[in-house]
Image (cartoon, rainbow, N blue to C red; front, side, top):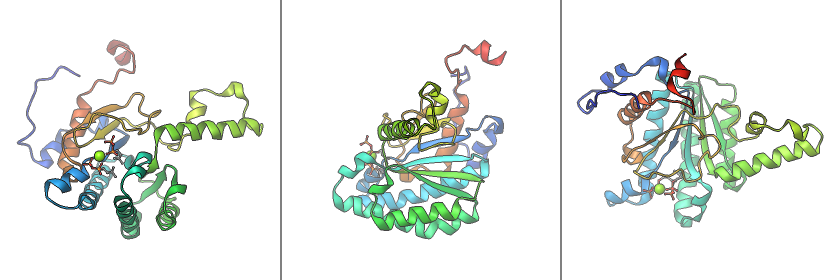
Length: 261
Ligand code: IPE
Ligand code: IPE
Ligand code: MG
């Protein structure tokens, strides 16, 4: 952390918070573990799905703020491989919500010039959800103002295993010589290629773990954990996370004088 006086930002309006951001120091890629939907609903005596439904509004606000600020990549964790172990009623409701989101927000994404991509073991999704994922990917493939990547049926370890399999297939086919394998080549086989690694990871709901998300890509990402539940994580909270990010000193193993010289 840079040595700065601790100043409370609580009294500042959204516009004042935005004005405090240094446009030169914005992250290029933000990743989010959107957690706490169930607890948000339970606190209100509502079924868990209502928390997931409300969380869509947070996604919408985050996309629009990224577009306003010029943040070009947003990757959100919507459904993990481990989430398949939840009760089928919740899984079905989540898949229904995913289809609803894609079928209704698709045109908005196109208008905003957002490219949509899904990463994960998508073959495990129900056919109708897979249809909307593919359709949205195809219809937004040419857009480049921002890339929205949604991790669905996603696991970080599976992603690494799938990358190994892809690489092995190319070596066996003679397309790649084994000696050429290095970190740069390997990452080209990850689902997220060609996105840069996230600069900032935000996890909501007070949990301080990675839960099998982007295990390779987070090697030098700044981590920001907030107690706010995902449906309450709106523009203001995102601005606060970005201000927190801008206070961090990214050293990448070096010492500060060597970075600035
Ligand atoms: C995150 O919210 C969304 C998904 C994992 C699909 P949760 O459903 O995990 O909400 P909590 O953590 O139980 O509150
Ligand atoms: C992580 O949240 C996955 C998503 C946000 C999609 P979980 O609620 O599934 O994670 P754990 O079980 O608390 O680690
Ligand atoms: Mg959770």
